[in-house]
Length: 184
Figure 1: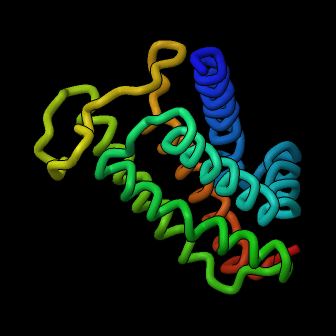
Figure 2: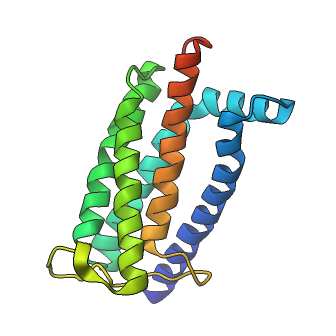
Figure 3: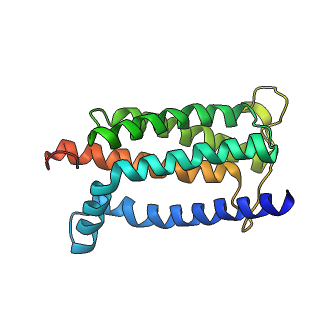
């Protein structure tokens, strides 16, 4: 089981690094209106927005279940709060994927912002070992189960995921506000 755990941790860390690259490319593209590269990035993300949101959120949901149910990492209180911000997004993006539209981008945006907040608090607790924000439970929020590449922990993975989901939702909201047409 240890080999599977190491492999699973590594795959999650690589996914997190790819997420960082995605953020570095897509975040500026949302706000820079010049250049063919940024227009192409916005166009590609707009075309696959619902699929990307669904795949990211479903993958994260499955990963949380593998970690807790198969590997045996017990979730702390902040992990549960992050899951509460994540799980509905699978349904939101799944329905949007089927219907080919999302009427209200604020739902995944607000859930992502909440997830970012909980992940940042969780990272703070793990770095400082200050449990002031952590409700007492079976597992301390300062417990570190995964450390890959010296900085990628489970809350870091969650932070990157929520930033990506938030940017996807924000991109849709900005596109709709700009009146650039219907979602594809």
